[in-house]
Amino acid sequence: MEKLIMIKYGELFTKKDNLKLFIDKLYFNIKNKLSDYDVTIEKNKVRMFIDIKNNDEKIIIDKLKEVFGIHSIVVCYKTEKNIESIYSLSFDILSKLKFNSFKVETNRADKNFEFNSLEVSKNVGAYLLKNINNIVVDVHNPDLILNVEIRKDFCYIYTSSSSIKGLGGYPNGIQGKGLLMLSGGIDSPVAGFLSMKRGVILECLYFDAPPHTSMEAKNKVISLAKILSNYGSNIKLHIVPFTKIEEEIYKNVDPTYMITIMRRMMYRIAERVANNIKAKIIINGESIGQVASQTLSSMFCINNVTNMPVIRPVSCLDKLEIIDIAKKINTYEISIMPFEDCCTIFVPKHPVINPNLHKCIGLESQIEYEKLIDEAVNNIEIIDVNSYEFINCDLL
Image (cartoon, rainbow, N blue to C red; front, side, top):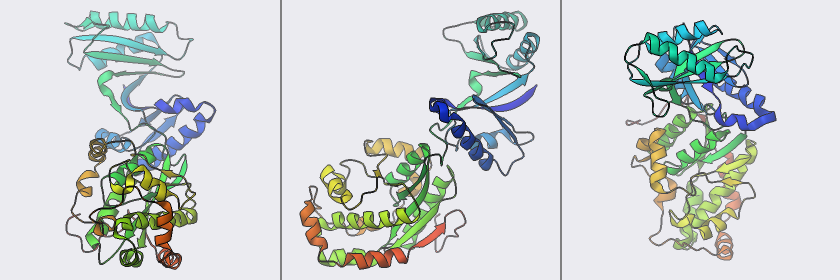
């Protein structure tokens, strides 16, 4: 019997006329993900099949678990499209397993097959009952489900226990590019991950403020970007020299408004960088009400400086929900490392939670921020996170 990995598309089926475009992108992403392995991939409009040959099945499946657009990953077996072959393969599969009850579910995509779906299920079930001892059929709560898919050229058989949940969403890159404002915290990597799940390809922006922030803080962010790149293409990280801007704000701005003004400067820079790299959106990890700069009033004042769409994927999640996702995508342990970014260095004791837009504009008039922004943007360091070699870093 020929063993394959079947890919089910799930949400992609909602794309109708654009389905081929989405499947082609998913095929490209899977092929790229498995480029180091000798595999054969075949696709059609309902399924994708991967012949893993002599490769380690677990390694291939673990790679596929990092690909957006896959609803489920199924280890299946292919056989000829006739009832005797279905009997034989079903017996070969189930005779090696331990179970008490089962049922058979059939998907007869080829309507020219000699038996309909119900007849196939009944006939295969009867054959298994006759040839395997001490098992019963239970259509309501079986220990095991045997799935039979009868398609145009072949029949594919697998059990419920061989199906692994994929990441779902859309193939990464299908929606174009977004710029993620990536800090060293818990929220922004999760926001990046959720954006990638909707088909957005990422580049990242980090605000570096030495000597107020450390090399360890920078390396922490690079490590987070590396993890995100596992779920898509190689990520470019744009590192903004933010020290002069932050110090000017510290010297000239009402302390209660420092974070608000700082975030407005960050948005201005993010818009400039996004336009330069032809990104369509800015993405960040803001969650409504989590901190002073994330109240609705603060978001209104801060967002006022840009006309570019700002996407906040975690805006309506609570902290525990965000942490749960961070743990699942392996960013949490890095995010909680105790190295502060520039958003936390100069946090005042009582930051304003309902800032006034006119006051923000007045406070900014005391700073020659356009010149400072030009200088910062012109001196951005751009790195490919996958090829970056860490500097002075003993813990990553």
